[in-house]
Amino acid sequence: MPVPEPAAAPTLLKRLFGIDPAESRVVLLSFGYFFLLMASYFVLRPLRDTMGTVYGVDHLQELFTGTFLLSFIVAPVYAGLASRIRLATFLPWVYGFIAITMVIFYILFQRVTNDRWVAAAFYIWLSTFNLLIISVFWSLMADIFSSTQAKRLFGVIAAGGTLGTVAAPAFIALFVTVIGTDNLLLTSAGGFALCAVIVRVLEAEKRRLVVSDVAVQKTSLDHSLGGNPLDGFVLLFRSRYLLLIALFLLLMTCISTVLYFQLGDLISKNFADREARTQAYATIDLATNSVALLIQLFGTGRFLQRFGVTAGLLVNPVIMVLAFVAVVFSPGLLVLGAIQVVRRFSEYSVAKPSRDMLFTIVDQQEKYKAKNVIDTVVYRFGDVVSAWVSAAILPFGVTGLALLGVVIALFWFPIAFILGRRYESGKPVDPQARPDESGLTGAAPATAR
Image (tube, rainbow, N blue to C red; front, top):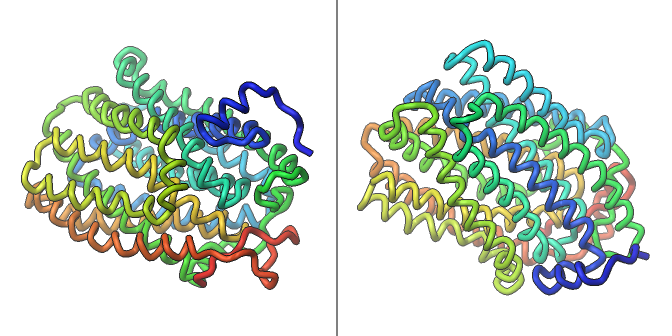
């Protein structure tokens, strides 16, 4: 039976956020884990974007290409290690390794200043691992919470990450000129190390919940996944459901990249030095995440329970069609910055939790291996394709990019609708479902296979 907990706090969590008392400990741990994870990354994201301007805005497509190629290498390495090392040991070391690389870059930045190749290496590595660490987080969440729980809890858990993304850029905007950008790397390394510790604690909590009466996923982390490094690609191309998720993410990424190019071009023209550009990016992050935090805490769960995942997936395509039309008529920095804020907070507060819920009905192999391929390789493939297209259109101005964005968003809308309907038509676990490597059947398989 679940361990009894003090009555006051769980009752308040239940009333405000829909968290049942038996879930409160694991939800709070997940909230704190995501806070540290996103704060550790967002401390570095403005620095990454600044390194992109050091390398050259006119050559960003080269950095996107490098990121895609590295992601294509990292994905099978990740799957290969997950196939051989038990998940309870492997997942914490993902974050431990990232912390070590941040210390290495700190040393490099101390020795060289504004070197284009060091800037390129940092940009590419950060753009590769940022997707990996977030993918690992949501894979673990989908491996702990059931589909029903996810509708109530994923918005609240996502708010932990958003709170981290508010704290990090606020700190940067206020203090980056005092402490310098290089010292942010050590702060980030410490945060990733703490994430590794929390993953170990969550693994113990998952074991406790599995043997209790709480309706969580009944899979175990005390085993490796088995298989081979290419399983993620094989699983993806075998499943129409996973391919739809990949296509949804591909179009979402194309939209993000078009906006990124527009914004990078305008910021480079309006701000001359490295610190001013870093502060500009951080200010946009702060505005975005402050709004997203409120929606995630008090709106996401209620919205998804009332309107469903399909509505959650459709929010961003609708917003982006309207936003790009606005850019066509008023292609200024203020308008574009405002659109970036709206796009990001709608994505973080509704679209992203909705997309991650889609993996609660697939098995453990697909949660970790196929999801990682989708979240890294497919995402960066969308980046690199839209980066080269955006670079070709950039000479025609921000308006040309906005017209490209309208076209992409119009294709995105029907994909979001079809995917949401397939998820919501999910069926209970099939007795013939393939068991995972632990011998335990995973979550219900997607019906559209």
